[in-house]
Image (cartoon, rainbow, N blue to C red; front, side, top):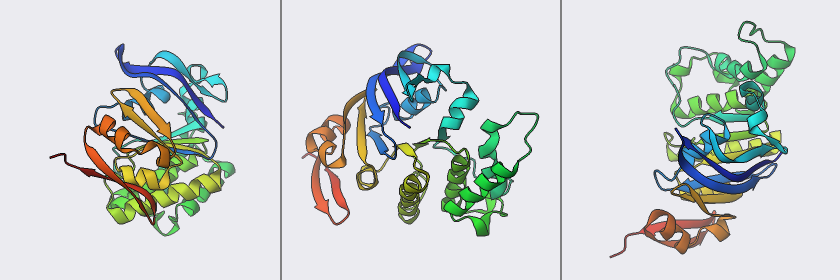
Length: 258
């Protein structure tokens, strides 16, 4: 289940933010997107999801343009976890996860059938939420809530997950656990992921490839070992850096230029 961006440009009110991006997301692959604030990372995800219009080029899912997909049909193929989540919801974890089945339902008929219940129970099991399934979202910790929302996207039974800075509001312990859950999810569900990640070293540690954006343009995409260079970091973030090999792989350390 591959996703192909071909000269893809998108933006707001005919103002181009993303300029002619080209890359292919392969099955079972995790691509991390990094870049400075305002580089277009979140906008790229919104364009792929058709939240904002395609201005040039195309996005193809299994050789079919996303322009030909209805909102529900696209949601069955691509699930989305936004950066800002409503953690004050007065609904149970299981009810939240059940909302992942909404792309398969009519708004006037949301009864869950046996297949829905099986998929919901599987999502609960994968994210280890059985003991929390009857708790309300507003009773959970940040990490627990994040797992519940990820379980909701799993219940969509999609082939691809798009995640916008999913670890921003988590402490380092929950960040690692959450990203390890995603890595396991790729193996269990045989899906693919594109995630915007604020922490470059976490992207290097967990992602198969990293894409660097600057001012809406793709300046490089490759494995962490090849893409995370002092030159690329200086180009993207306008700051010097040192790169070291560590027990968890390549890690990058920004330094001020004196």
